[in-house]
Image (cartoon, one colour):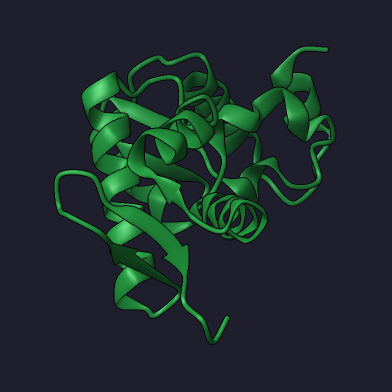
Length: 146
């Protein structure tokens, strides 16, 4: 089914926002004021030109699995925590393999690597995970209190 028709079925979105979200989904450009408005409403995420529909906008549409490449950061954090709990730690290569396929398709490999790095550092600063071993080959583990 056409993504626009799915969005039109949502009565909480005005028609002009539905069409703008359709443009985002199709990787078409938006006017800067449209980007600001959709971002203020938390309907899109990412940076121009690699915008994607946010989890908030996808909720209630149904068939969310069709838009899995636009996952939210909380989902990535959960994946990392679950993976580390099961495997009792992981190297960066393992975490890259876990997350790269789930990151937005509009990102290139360098951007995906940066996003994973930022996610891991954020989780480390928040006390969720720890990095052990040499900087050249760190092992990420859940903090013992988790």
